[in-house]
Image (tube, rainbow, N blue to C red; front, top):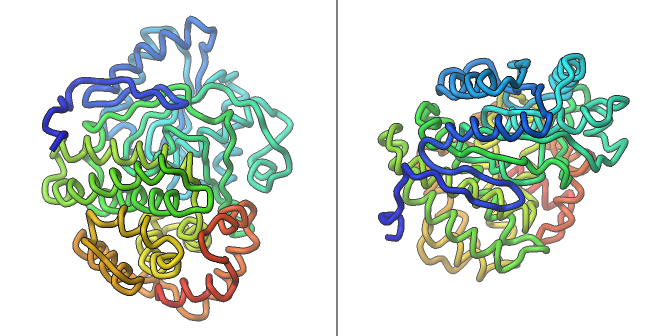
Length: 395
């Protein structure tokens, strides 16, 4: 396989709308980024993170030194949680404004980066708050520069224009997509990812698989999205078992991170539909539910729903994990078998959901701002009955 010719210890630039520094040791590029910021007058930044991972991975030691060496002042907001909320974004935005931050550095997985993108917008709109942003009371076209230092191999948010934040008082988990929140720089360093827990190792890579399944089968899918989808699923199918067996396998982490980055580019081009539209209500209602786990639970039922509409595409992109399939039942069953093989056999009941929750979940799918846009590009008609069936068959 071509992967054998890749030196994982060489840091490469991969240019999308974002300049991605990719490879083991890429975290050292933060010094170049800090120099660039200082030269442009971006001498104050807010660092967005969770409580622990940014330090436990060793990323913070390198980032802090680079900022100090280049005389870039910083303030850290470490209150970002999984499924970040507008409450946290508003807190961070106030801290950033009071400090005079001119840029955002996010260290973590999708949650710190999405929260950081949100703060980057609000720094340009001091009269707005996160609720305004995620309830679509205004349309931003500006944000301060963003650096995404990625600690997981799943979301792809380090190289696209999307962000997701929960509005807790309404159980809304909308998605925004604006060109102004493409990160200026991203760092994908697989060496920072070896401390991911076994569960999160599984969940984040399953997130990447969901990204490409949806992007390759949406109404706006391009050949580019389909090509990327096949490669992402090939890499995840090959390297996720290796990372589960040996969490410190840097080659496995490298290619899972590459797959996730490609997945982010893929859904930047093909967008998303059912699985994400239906997962957002799940983790909005139960904040402790991992996004990737919710997606895994829904995926077999979504495959069954869309298979006949996109049979040839699904046969092609899923083959690395399912082999050849001929029917929606077979495709759905083979995807579930693959999920079980990587340690994710879960159903909604295992996460505390029951038949009594379905009405609320269906309602949230159709009332949460932005999710109608995802449903509108699904390859089959998204009715309340079809959405209900996906939830019910995932129990």
